[in-house]
Length: 409
View (cartoon, rainbow, N blue to C red):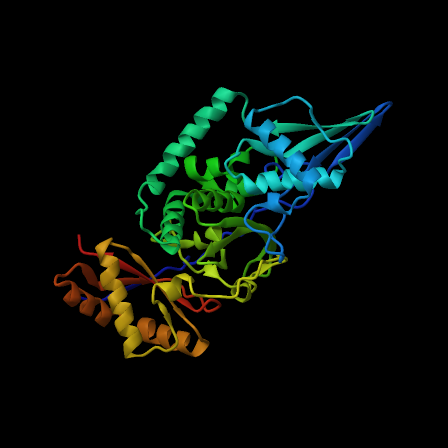
């Protein structure tokens, strides 16, 4: 039978567009800049606040911990008001500055992804020597909020209850990451919308329940789910740069595994097309500052310098050479993948020479067909199709080769 090689022309398409949450604009609607009006005895200022990037001071996983006593007081009042859907003017300490309010509100939104109903803009009013904050919401009633919370909790239970009680933190992260990316799709409509009509795509509800999100929805969902299983995870924001050099505001995560911090960009991992349908990769799964800095800019990191929990390192799919040992490891990965009928297999090479040799050997010399045959022999039956393989287009920048296998029906 003639062997068929199906090249995936759209493989590894990175989702960059539309993750806009510029400082001073609403991440849900990108509305007008902050404005103020004044009248006798009263001034009013509308402000939009966004989560801040993590800093190098190692302040932990909660923005709350970085606030001073006054700001923590504001934070507590905002959080309580949000939980109660309080729409009245909320009095805060009279000596609060706009910087205090912005920083406190930003910390609330950063620390509490489960408050998906809280809009990213608020109103500040001064009356005499008193200062008030008025919050805005994406829901109209407590009944609606509680029903949406129920739906979210029910959806999350499908992955949280599937995680073994003795799972280590890496396994928890991998299971949650793969579950989320299998569930959610990137919303180009929300990314392009500037009217606020797709506000939920920026939230955990949009990602996990409605299954449509932009980068903020992905990042907040990873944060919420990982924190649920006691894996420290926080938000980080910056700028993503595509292969054409186009920049766009972006949000991803900082995850702590065994006391070491890593970058995790679930949005950019949700970027592989398999026969026209979206699948995902692990290229941005637990990477260092140096690695992610190639196409992520303008961020402040707490210091991600290790690769111990990097996906390819941890899964023994990172290679220094393309040799018989490497081919044996790829064949073993095919056998392991067949247990769960995984179709997408990824392999990373630590240097350009090894990557080029592997791409030449696997793709051009078609070594992969011998590996498929050997994998079936290892399984003991013909499970993998030995005449059909699809390749990702290759990712020279990250030196990742993606193989898409097919199974005998």
